[in-house]
Image (cartoon, rainbow, N blue to C red; front, side, top):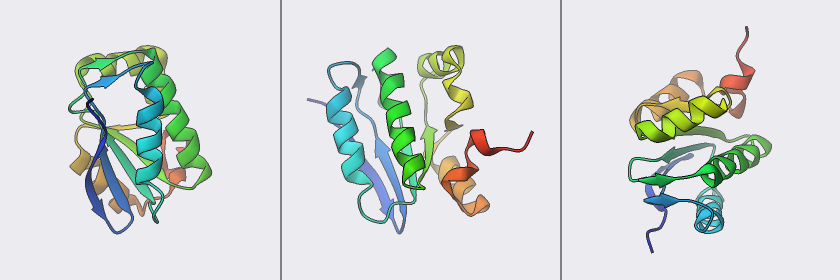
Length: 128
């Protein structure tokens, strides 16, 4: 089975690569793996979807569940390396207005570092 993997862990930042398939059947295992990745002093979580080739509505549910957890724990959450079909799903559902989306994991890390990185830096906290 294709699994999540921690690509990068440095100080309080963790980059997790999501698997090839993010669907109803893999959602619970992915959620558990991501929660395990953020247990040790994580303040900034980046989820990379670079490997993801199959993503259904359960994937959106998963991302929002992870987002709720990170908000409760004052962890920034960024998505990176989105395949075009995932970006389109997020745009159609409006999820891209809730979750911070970056072209690459490197860009996500740099953005958090520039801002000083708190969970309140996400899209919902921007001043209008």
